[in-house]
Length: 53
Image (cartoon, rainbow, N blue to C red):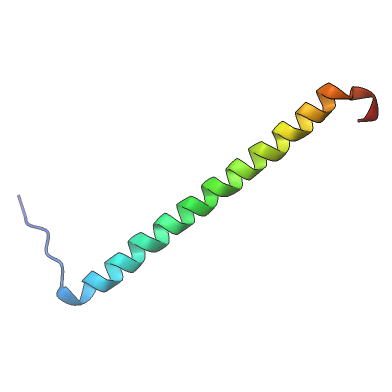
């Protein structure tokens, strides 16, 4: 079993990569949540007043 070797110069870049990945995942989740909220509101409005849709 080999050991994982990381150059000391790569450590700051690793943190940036992890932070960027986390930010992108959060943004994607926020977009999905917003879409689900809009669809839920549209369904609620349609069920309350189907004649206006």
